[in-house]
Image 1 (cartoon, protein in one colour):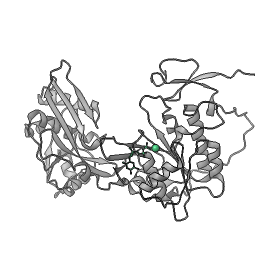
Image 2 (cartoon, rainbow, N blue to C red):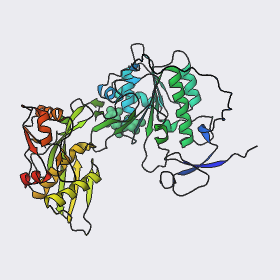
Image 3 (spheres, rainbow, N blue to C red):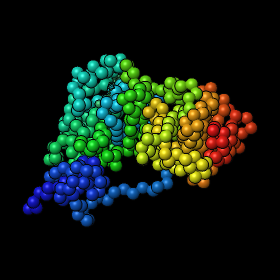
Image 4 (cartoon, protein in one colour):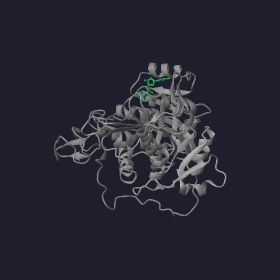
Length: 454
Ligand code: TYD
Ligand code: MG
């Protein structure tokens, strides 16, 4: 009989190693290998050739229906899932502890419940009393949601398999779940993977939507939900920080919908409130024209979003000046600084530079280059930008300002929020037509922008 092998499994990425090491060779995380016995969930018996059954092959062509969905009625959530929870699918919602995952999901559970739909909320972290208390605080005390405080997968599956399968099952959180079928301790990658696998199998079979909550930990001490990301149909991240009221739900993977939509919520005393006009919220606390602030007309998926980019440029007392970015890509900042240096003659090598996107939003679009550059130049020159202008455009390494997509939507949003001009790439002027929502001051190069501000 084969000796049961001891393995070391990286709790960050799930890589298996025969011996312990201080650093995972697969993902490079330090101190993440944990001893686990047995191959766990993946150790299935090898199929003997010729012993399989004949499966039915169907032609690719033919009619296909849209995946049936359970609409939650929470607009911002449905926007991110692509129009509601797809039946029989599994969704992972990740996020830092305390960000509001349980709050969002109890609200979603309550919204889905009723009109004959069955919703089960399984909490592995809180007692029934605590879940009830929260629901009461949120004014959802009457919702027809079934609760359980359980962590053993076998018990949970037996419970939800009895009778008509529920429409929605929420597992809060997958890290607390464990199954008899593997020996590893709860919370390890092997347990999480096995538990998720069993739940996902149930979802497919019963046509139930399963939502798994997963905590993201920075130090990799508790198994991250990354191993589960490959197994589920959609991965949503709930982001934001404690200092801000805004919470952003973003899809990073979605087999049944878009991945560039975001849902915006505000955390209040009555739980999460949908923000259907996020621009107004993100620009809410704006100072009257101060140097270093530029309003970026951005896009998040199909929705335009105005947000303020703030820069501080100051001579540095340090040999190596500081560069700090919050909410934007630091490589992108380096690139814009290099272009300002090489093509506009702005020497910033001896300056500390800070760039911040207001409201805790994270911007991923290259179209933000021009707004970032405008904020930087404005701070350096101590010259406030016109408070009625928005900026957008991509900066290339040659110093040219390139056209970006969705110019019309950006301009309309600017008009809606009371702005009266847009500083934008010359290449976007034609698309905006003869009478754009707000007049465009077209820019062909970054040097042109600098000349205008300084
Ligand atoms: P929670 O949903 O428990 O976070 P998670 O499940 O992601 O760990 O939310 C925790 C925070 O939300 C907590 O600090 C309190 C705050 N909160 C409110 O501000 N208002 C509310 O109505 C609720 C229920 C929570
Ligand atoms: Mg929670």
